Image (tube, rainbow, N blue to C red; front, side, top):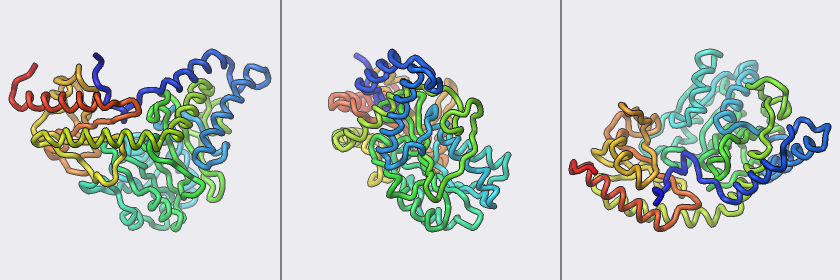
Length: 387
């Protein structure tokens, strides 16, 4: 029997309907969409534009505001690196973010700070794992050009108050970007009624394919000016050069449409299973959940197990459950998660943290098997009886 898959925050299992659409597109669309002078290229471009329309309509955007990228990492880089030149020219080189962002946000900002004169402020969080709009507002000055805060954290599942932050940014004349990757499958997004100026998300976080994602950037006032990061043939209205991946784009649109149609149903079913999982884990001595459980995605459980080494538990349960340590593990060392460090410091709770990510295809039986596996595995490690 295959192990229970509880690593959907790292990558979701592709929906069979998405696989069907993608494989059909791989057979049908051979041509380069940019070769629109012939029938095959025009057909591929039509498929791309139809997919763009589906995604734009789903978030209240216009099709030209949707740029296809290789994933959220690239989309985040394009948003941050691309926006900075115009902000710097305007005398607004200050960027505010949170200490718990994904590396694809923090690393570009570090680069801008080291190489381009950006002033980057990283707002701390407490044990709740949430940044506050008040903390953001306290840092906004006349030189602030951009705020970037994720919709939900990929390690803890804690939902951030982005609507409140976006409204504050609009009032102060500051652009707002959000990495929406972890939230797309579980929370709707409407850029027409919100003050979000840029948003990034990725196919493989919503039961779609890897290697494809989206950057939304506002073209209505206040319009976001972006400088390309990847240069070449000028695809995607000059913002993102490179041959468009037609099958992945078509599959992304299918995954996005399915997520929108099934969101309510998925959230109810997954939240119920999450509740059972948390109850089962809470019965293990020394186990406690991390972060504000009143503001958490319905699929994510971050917990710490007192006295348990992450690598040891992952090896113990490798044939039973697929999951992640919140620390970055290698064969000989464990690096604590910057997210958990931001919440709890360099503490035993940080070093013994784990992440479980449920998904659309997680079953009740999966949850019971996982509870049994963690109960027995943690018990064996603590008693010293391995194997």
